[in-house]
Image (tube, rainbow over all chains, first blue to last red; front, top):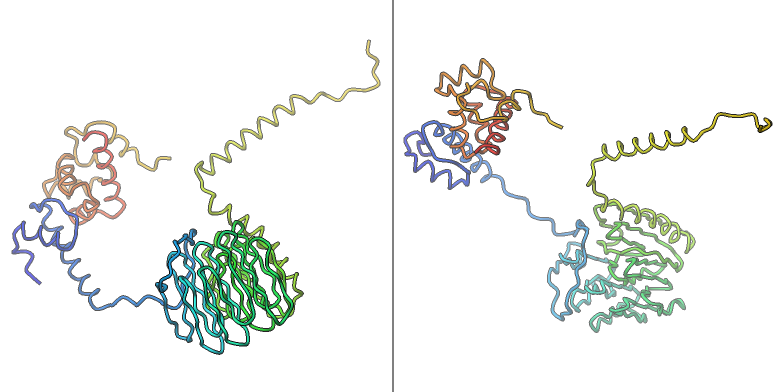
Length: 347
Length: 89
């Protein structure tokens, strides 16, 4: 450590610049102060040099921002931000879309290729299409995976699913159960006999998982979840609901669905995280409708919450209210007439 | 909603001229004496120091070191001088 006392003013000034300390001229009265500052900076540096910063967490990608999805041009390149996670599943974390979905299945076969496709274990092919933000996964017994055209989610087995980017519709049919023919607009077909809808405006994607851990994630902004979890996360409302049902359930609720990590790990958004996980056998419609009803007020409340800003101070609002109330009181009292005998004869 | 003292408002209201250092907000008798010993007998000398330190919050530290003021007093003096500068400088 150089002897600060013996340094000239200019040298001290250059030292201050070195440590990026904002300073004025080093004169007689300021010298002592600046020497002290430089000493502090030196000792801080020594301390910092010993402590290393922890490495960033790579496993999960958390939904933290309000705006999570950004449309991307279609590209058919290998996905960026492809991370391999510890449990064998390869997950896709796309920073812009903030989508990471992982499903862990028995067979760690992963067919992922289209751009922004999340590869998941097993025989699921899941896609996250940036524009449509659709990722659909179906997991079936046979680890056959057809991954294919851009914006088409390939699903295992005999599911035929597609996500239409404009309509954001993906339909999946599963042979096991004579399930849904997807065709309604913005309806995502999901594995098994689940009928799921994703409404992009409402941003809802619901998935029901039945006995077979098939996962058909598809609606726009739907992230897959492992197993038979039915999860959704509404990015605006940050609602994520997971229901495990044994029967095909039909849930139509306008929520954005975000993908979460592996099987039952959900990563929720920052605000109103709503999680409804039921591992029992609820009736198909009940959990979805219950969650739908819960989600709607939550979403409406949540949507209002971030928008609420106090441009006018609260105390002022109260004051105005009080003045108005007093005014009304005055008006009404002045309108009151003293009670008269109604039977008086008018002369 | 003003949280400034009367002294502050008085000082900021007009050019300081030749006011004594104790006219500054936060500087009382004791601190004023200590500053005088250091050579800062007038408010404008302290202003000079404030300006040399580039009107930065370093001034607070300097004041603490020089005359042993506590945080509240030093911040009060800093705010007082800053506002004065905003109006008159």
